[in-house]
Every structure is written in C-alpha cells, then in structure tokens.
Length: 292
Image (cartoon, rainbow, N blue to C red; front, side, top):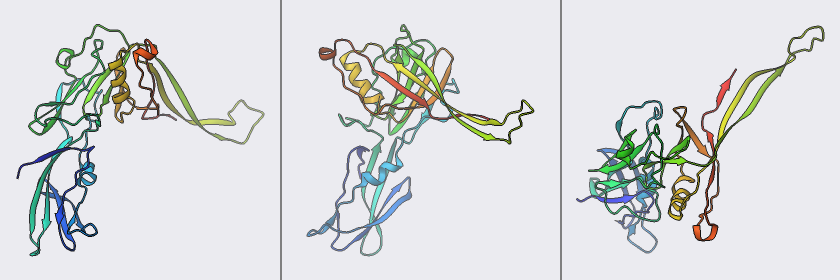
C-alpha cells in the first residue's frame, strides 16, 4: 500500500466503515502506539477518526542538548518525519491494514510541502552573518530529516561580511532551523529574585541580622534587528517571533544560550507604509542562574 504523506498542521480523517463500532490501532516501526474504538457518525455506517490529532504527538523536531557546547560538524537524525500504519479489527478479530501514512513536522500554514523527497526546510529571513556564528541546515532525504549542525557559511548560504554581536538559531514554521543576525542596538540586563532569612538582632556586633541565602538571576536581552526589507520583515514576523525553540548566540563571547521570546505580538510592517523599519525582540534565558 503506497504511503500518503501529510504535514502535522493539517487534519487527516480516515473513513472506517462499521455499522456498530470498530477497534483500530496505529503502529510505528511495528510497535502499537495507539489503540481505541470508533463509532459511526449519526445516520451513517462509517466513522471518521482524525489521525492527525493522535499522530502529531509522536512527531517532533529538536536539536541535541549539547547544541552550542560542541563545535563538531554532525548530522543529527531527528523524529521530524515518521511513517505509520493504521489497522482495523475485522469480524474474525483479525487486524487488517487499511492505511500507510507519513507525517512531517511542519507548521507553515501558508504552504504545504510539495514533495517529501530532497525537501529543504530552511526559509532564511536574510543571509546576513559574521564569522564565528553557528549554523544549522535542515533537509529531508529519503524519509529522513537531517540537521547539519555548524556547517560552513558557504554550505548554508550565509554572507559573513556584516556586523553584529548577537544572533539566534530558531525553529521556523517549516520545521527547519535558521540563523538570524541582529544588526541594530542590543543590550543585556539581569533581574533578581532574592531569598533571605532574619536572625535575632544583636546591636553589640556587626553581624548580619537579615541575610541573603540565595539569589536567582534571570538574564534578558533586548535585540534590535536593524533595517529590513518587506520580504525580510514578513519572514521575521512569521518565523521568528512565534518560534518555540530559540538559542541566542553571543558570537563575540563564543557562547550559546537557550532563550524564550517574551514578545506576544508583532506587526507585519511594510516599506510603503513605514518607510524603513526594524523590530525589537526581547528574549529571556530559559535556565535561571542560582547563587547560594
């Protein structure tokens, strides 16, 4: 049975003909990951389970935990594309295969992937970069998604002749990873949560009565994109601001931090209306720093 490929952001319902109810299950690599019952829709003799709601939980895209800590060039096989088999139980209590479906981690509502073979999942805002930046190039070939980490600028299509201290690696809506360089003014701040305890006071000494026993520091950065064109602005608002995986690169210091974007709203700016324009993005380190 030929495999039907689907992106995870689209519903996929499968008709299962049954006058009463039927058991069905979903398997991946021969292992059952889901089993349940379906009942027919009122007035019909078939059920329509939405497979996407089940399968999307088994498809994901992640970089390794040591991203930014290692400078080794490596290909990482992800779980961003998987193939699944759907089976139903017949009247003799035997399982019968009725569908093969492949799912790709993809959340771009503006387009569907036209092919699942040799598909480039990158969609860069622009090609600006500086020496020392880390890159990831994401592609799918023969049903395997590969993240080529720390590839050269030439291999990933970046021009390192620009200026900027901070950049980000982020997961875009296509399910691939891209890099963006901030070329405007950037700043770093720390916020503190202070924990303290009080001792009985002693006015005859210089000892501490109220004492800090732990400080929790949360670093944050305010980043300005620099001037962008209409197309760059659109891609930045579309792919970057809503990304749920972002790593901040302090290229000058050679450090990488997992961060969370604090902004909850963005405007799709256009050159005709706003002349030249830029965006300011606030990111917060996702791991707090403890000092005791």
